[in-house]
Image (cartoon, rainbow, N blue to C red):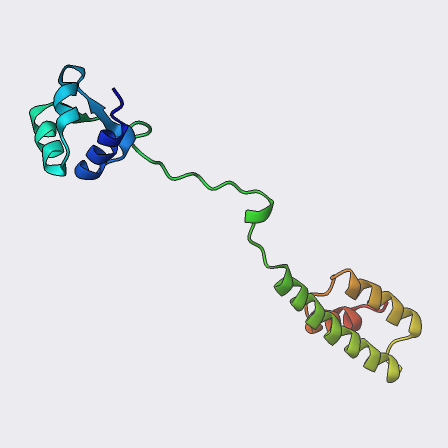
Length: 135
């Protein structure tokens, strides 16, 4: 006997999924005669229809975050911005020194390479190295 429609009706009446509905094999004739939701509820109370427990995991644990390529949070744009501002400031400063002939062309080229290598952390640092020791 096909009780698929009764199973769907029972699922709607009891508020669960149809996969969780199970019938008592001894009372299939009573289940076949049930046509309303109230009949289904009465059969559930009598024990002819029962609801299975939920299968699967009982406790859902939060997945631990994994650091891979897309999840590494860095700000390369800010680092680049700092580098650009400092480099422009230092380059304009040494070009002024070269124009006023405070440093020679060779010193200018050497300092430019050092600026590109991020040796100087500030304009004061550059001034100290220029005045402190002769290049």
